[in-house]
Length: 62
Image (cartoon, rainbow, N blue to C red; front, side):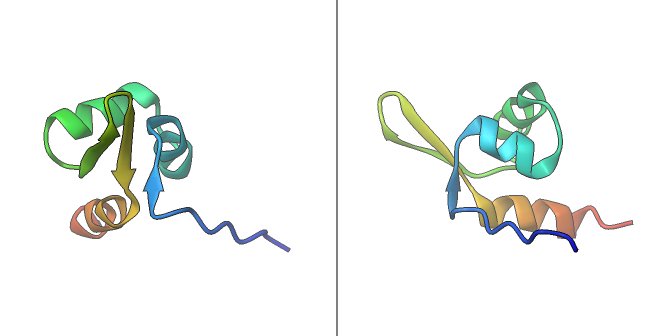
């Protein structure tokens, strides 16, 4: 049986990469292209919104 993983609403770059099964470089590129919504909660704490990952996936369905 597969384990269901519920991701938090705001993910680190590393968590987002693991969630999307891509590299952190890919996540950084998607943030730079504004394809993913990311925000700073402090000077060193940047998080990616999980809903933007879901929206990107839906937009790119084949």
